Length: 380
Image (cartoon, rainbow, N blue to C red; front, side, top):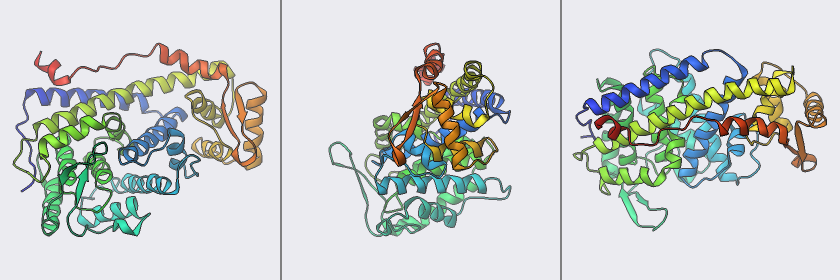
């Protein structure tokens, strides 16, 4: 027996409809293959990696995660955190590819393959294999045991049941993804990486259901910013162990709220990214797209390194040499658009005041995000 869907009422369906409306608006904004859309995807991916790993104690900056997304070396993390970021990148990239196959469905082998990608930086994690023995989740603040995974003898059958559920259920797609994430989290089938797996796989369920690109279906950023609320609701529906008869409505409502707020954030970011691109063009005039991508990232506070700049060129459909990249960056410094920091291999570039001011002007006039409980709003 798995945690199952509660009765989905008018309040839940109203929030699901609002999410669908926002996603449709987001699709409309990003439908054109503009360079700023590429930047939006890349940084959305980076935020997903950053926050999902931060929840598990692998802390990094957006700069670090953005470097990993494009296959470059992050500068400010230890080896294990770098490997954790890269593992999540590989798993999500694998999902991006597999959901393009129309006949693809979830399987135990698929789940174990993703786990191998996410955790293979340490053989102690038993990458790609179920755990051995009992497992306990402890509070990051008190050290108390807050959840006990199911008995290891029950794991294979429950995971088979979960795969069958997600492949055959008639539950609404968001509810299906929510319950997949909840059940995997509560079963805790692996020695390590259970949270990352559950969050990654909920994006897979939604993308495989045809909802949108997996990058824009993640709620890792929201969960990373509301970690205690996330833990609290899991404890509410789990009470510290496997209790599938518990009411899952609190989890469903938390999950839908996360999607509503994250989709609203992405929609606002998309509009701001388009405005930033246009305002930057007004400031600097006609320049190669690779330079505009660099200036846009720098304006938002990211550091630019030469290797990263070369990736920007690829994003814009160009291939440039290290020499060309160096000349471009020097020209941007000479023109007062970037400032050079550090020396030799440690050199990076930041936005000048006039470039940073473009982004400040946008953020100072941005639309506020709704923070009220959407279910309270529906009831009112």
